[in-house]
Length: 423
Ligand SMILES: Cc1ncc(COP(=O)(O)O)c(C=O)c1O
Image (cartoon, rainbow, N blue to C red):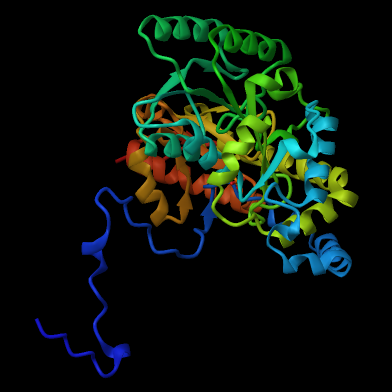
């Protein structure tokens, strides 16, 4: 066949139909990015009024002046684990606050703890494998595990996290059926979405059971620095039994989510298998240098301020929910973090509220996305209170209650009055 004539002006030629070339089973297309909704209660954003811009700018100038020449080299010429200054910072913080005592070489800086989760998924999961997750769990983690073909089993939990006795029964049942979970994924300190913190005694029990059944634990401690009390949270699982736990931490919530910096703490037999899978030729070194420099002088003051601010915003949101939803909403009182987890009456399926709420400018995360068994959380929702101002929190919750009433007749009472006739 003769060659097709090359169009004279490629700029005006019709685009190739690339859709025919995609591999089968490709993920659904993303929505075209747009501006944030007026009342944005989704995602894990942080408070824009408390970005330490001046200190970050000073840190950037200082570290670039001092060490900028290193940027000429991939990974600053010091290898793929990450900027040593940042790994030392992480090691120091973990020893002070989480009771973990890693050496700098037990720490791998990742591009978002999302990447840490990707590495864990790639290292351990093949189609058909089983993973244990809390009955309510982080959507982003469950999505990754499911995408790898893993079967997710929910573990019974309460506000203090995994219930250990039922877990032991579950593990006994799995063992009897010849199933060995690849790992158990948990957020013991400021659980996403409930905001619960597992008490110290239960941590020890959990580790005892995990050891007895030979189950590896993946501990996601993304929110560990945002516990309200300000006092140190109970020791991390990795602090209590390092050999049983791969630990993931993040700067997204304690510094800034747009700085894509996180870390994995694990023994070398695991880190040495994660490194070849990390295909980004190194996490952004400039970000690492700036964050390390910033944390060196400001970590305690910054996280103290963040905790105080976020705690106050949570109270604003709790009050708004109580005012607008009355007894129709049960709130879990978070012990830290950036989310409020709500339960509406069983008759409300929050999935039916997503589109009408979006039309009213309100975005929220529907509970089913945060549950191992989605239908169990059909009347629950997660609201992030970190990004909106106090007045947007009040107005947005009022708007959400109005939409909910229009769609379901619930809440019949709110803002100290009976609402007008329902649908
Ligand atoms: C529990 C948990 N782990 C990990 C992440 C990933 O965060 P990042 O990649 O921004 O560190 C999030 C983000 O919301 C989270 O909630």
